[in-house]
Length: 277
Image (cartoon, rainbow, N blue to C red; front, side, top):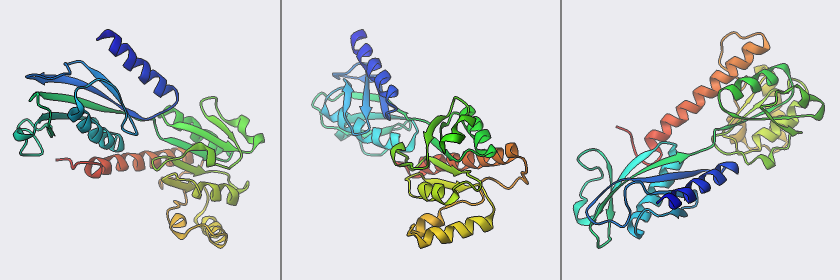
């Protein structure tokens, strides 16, 4: 068992090193004859591959299905795999989610599945005072921060922001839960905004006046940026707290990102695989 755990922990360390996303599944209880024992662990990759031993194929199928939902929702889950003739409801009497097992052993296995997801990435375009303060705030709150700016502006960012020269964001592998804030403030605004809206980031905002954002939006529409993407642009960036100083503007933007992130997490808890009570 110790060797098995060492292999699993080594796999976890390697996956975290490359910023992969996966689930860790742990057998917490067994009843009657089962091939897996309490304490057994495995890693479930995003493509469903299981590294480690949790039991027979019927258990693995339930783990794969549940791990995909857990990873999407970002919320841990306890599941119970029981013989098929004992499963008549979605939940057991104690509220644990049930899955049918077709294995001849007839045993019951409780498995805790927890997601190992990277923190959202925040890409900040531009080297303005708002941009540099925002980078520090976001890093403090645990976001993975990337500063995308012209070469001469990158030195203004703290060491905890990854530096990316220019506004071409294709190589950053942005996803739906990631954020882009364009804080160029007059320095190649259109180029940065076009790159941000062309990415797969789920939330894009622009630091600037509503009038300026509307002018840029019209220019980008003429250049072929899809209407749906332009409609998703949040401008001006941040919550309305009457901010004036760069530090205050950065605070309002960070508060907005937190609000969006937490609302999305709440929505996933309801629709990301199962509804909450």
